[in-house]
Length: 459
Image 1 (cartoon, rainbow, N blue to C red):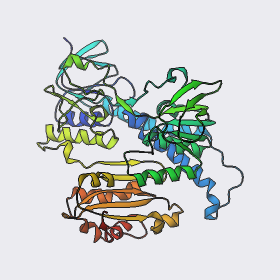
Image 2: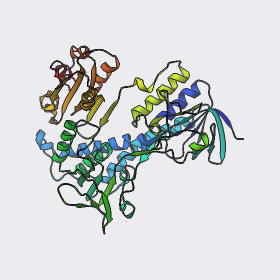
Image 3: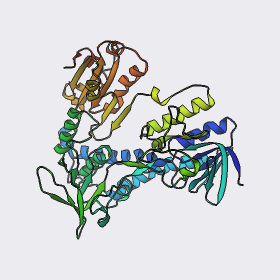
């Protein structure tokens, strides 16, 4: 029998390290098991590296547009991919090293840099040692899904992990998957100088969004020279001398596209297949996600699952909120629940999309009597002054309760301005609270009260 701890945490993503801090502060001994890179997806292959690259792509884009602002730049704008990668690596390394150093120097916390595997419901094999605890918290995250598409095993392909390590610019990047991850990389590499084609099986991009949002995003990307191939229902691959052929089978356009590089961005799967969950008796669903209740408890007493592996969010902010819920319930006598939170997410193309609450489609499906307000970003002074007036904002309100149901802002600053709306939704106040607020000029947020002052029945 190996060492016993008060708690074991498996995985150093967003939820795990912060929970270790709270548990050790409460006097518990904690075993922290991480098999690979500290910081999880966000720090290593997600938010931090991709948004760092987005910033570099934005700089290149604005440099090319300099003349629009009366600024003269001599010569052709060149992107040094190795320098872009080095900047990204330096930024994420600080975050990753900071998390690892925090855990390794945390009092009452023992770090195991090993693969974890359950031996029983409260015993875990960490490398060569078996450790046990009354409480175990699973925070193992997810990875790119590689479906068994015809020919995929015959080509070299990239996922969100591999594409971050490129040191040369793809001549033609073919992105398979027209959703959040794929579109961010598509625009990014187009701005770096690659030819880019997005191949999507569905009839439109980002299908979780409303149709008008999808159409506007498609227009933004096509205006930058990105090729969009929709209705690609029979995607398949063939090897080529350089790169790969991607069979598209669309309603129009060439039946196949040649890419020097292929990025697969067709969803995520949880890292639960090698944890030995059966030995622990922990139940997963048909996709491998750990089944949890409203307080993130699994079916096994004393075992919780947080972050991407529980299928209850899939974002950095939902993962961190999972930590807050678990800590509040365990340590603060504060009964918080997953169902208390309002859905919120962003798409970090440029301009970004911020979306909270219900979409227009969901409101219509609910049958609620609703009001809607919209405004194009061309009518937002801040956007016009910046020369970034693409997109629009849309807000939906319950006609009876006057509570805000949801909103989408596709436009410059939309990922920040959306929080004005989200916070009023959390405060459970009527939309008039926000409508009557005096916002600062000139901002994107100042137009939100204006939109709310011009609501019309949802037809």
